Length: 211
Image 1: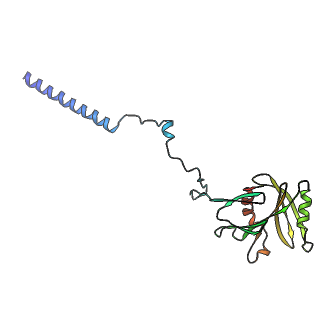
Image 2: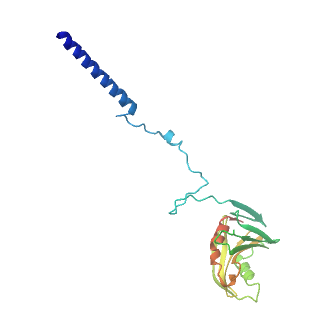
Image 3: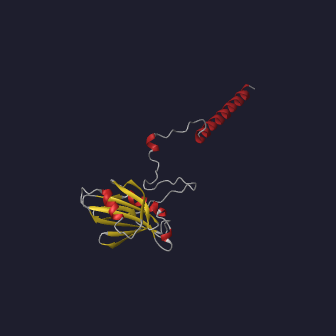
């Protein structure tokens, strides 16, 4: 009887040990009761970051904006950087015309940049007044004249009416040249429109202008 009890006790202890050992191994395998590893600062720094040339679009669509390819042009002492899709046309030795690309909302706009001889010491306000009023056949009425900032330095933005057409002109100067920047509408019915629709194109141009 005692032998049977001992055998029964031995078998029971053996079964208990096997069950406990199996439970422990299963817990180790599944990670029960363990604390997840905390990512270190060094590991966090290895996460891929967005391309620096792509700016996130904050619109409701959440899509990233595509970087705009740019082009640089220089002539007669000035230089500017504008979208590569803009067309630059040399219309005279000291005059160029810029046209925005066909997909742009500014497609009906152009900007003409003209360079004129200038000597330091000349009053710039008098020069501008003489330039705008050079053609006595034109009726000119000034509305405002104010400073405007370029990529380097400042100029003067003149707004008014020229032969009943609202007009915006921007002027800049260095020691040897005076520059006239004239945005305008082109195409059918352009004369009936103001230059205001070209404000965005003008702002883009002067933001990349260096005199």
